Image (cartoon, rainbow over all chains, first blue to last red):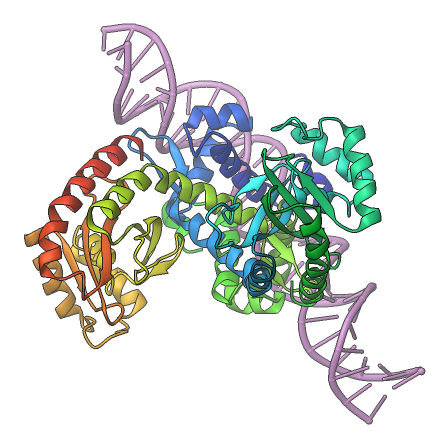
Length: 253
Length: 253
DNA sequence: CATTTAGAGTTCACTAAATGGAATTGTTTT
DNA sequence: AAAACAATTCCATTTAGTGAACTCTAAATG
């Protein structure tokens, strides 16, 4: 909206994705007036944009006339995640084979991290994060690993825009604590999520420095198995995998 | 493009999704000139649209300057599939529990079907279709079940635009055969994919008549287990599930 | 290693398309 | 039948698209 001035963006394109995001934020379904209120756009404009999206299959109109995300988006999202995660999959798999715990890859998308690749442990008690799922940056291993690669101003902007929910007692709840932890992450070269996201789950994570979009990988599991001894075994393997992926993404994406 | 005349669509919105689809079709990555050739749009226009998409996070620009689908699309697609599949999941799960074979839900998206919900069998030999995956309509159970609910003109348009590949010897290869099969499907009330998509896999499928977007569910597995006797047990359960889902989607989406 | 050169990225002035306020017409829900 | 919301129309104003020419950058060539 206001961005169009500074970035040379196309107004109707920015608006159309704004509308899709509003529908997403409303739990996947919005009425016209709801969209008008939240987007602060005039009604005829919204309707015209929605008509286009409906025609193209990216929005469905429900029988009660409200609008929902359409099947076309599934296809685009699936292709995007395939492309992002395809190269990473075997590398993540190798980590799982070496360490016996689930491995993930996540990227920064706006102000949150989105999981784009995953390999599961075969243990019956394991962590499981679906590809496509989003998470806060400040309370996840991958999120903190990513934040540690960004300039402080951007960290502040990202975290303050989303707030700092504390899902567990160990979660970082203040900007001060977070910035201090990020400094430690930069020093040691990897991030630790020690039951900050979920009680009983510990995670070691490392950023891919050369990736064009800020990206990180992690290995996570129950604290009973993922202890500090595990960390000592995990870190070199994570580093190896991160370097390999980083080199690839620097070239190809 | 030409649609804008007939539908009152917004040109730049149609074009932007055109570009995303071209990137998708090119395997997830396209150069500017590639996009120019395939979209037949002038260069400055494409560049402006892409700049907007990159700014919004729906396209990433790779170090070699070509463009790829961005992480923002994963989020939209994930939300879309969650919304579409969320209600269906427990119903599909019930089918799996009752019949021991994988169950799927798929919708028509343009000229193909896209899988939007899934529950897996726990057997080691089982069918597995990822949510988001697309398939031809004429050679899948869900596709045929959906086609059988559409007017013949639309069936012809969909199938002729995609062609009729025959992945197995049992696949339907001519419009005549397909239309005859659709007639049988309408008579008996469900579709059978008898090794038409993949050798050794049989599938029973049923459309959700009230769904706003043409939608179908199916149960599928190896022919050794999914035989005609299995079909007799499956059909009433499928019908029950289809009615339940259909009633829900008629109201909510 | 300097020089082509191909393609990306940009500029500009003009034409085409999109926008949005006010008012109008449908369509449900109450 | 009224109220509430959705859908649409009109058209002056704003924004986007385009063809031609230009700059910039990276990598292939000699």
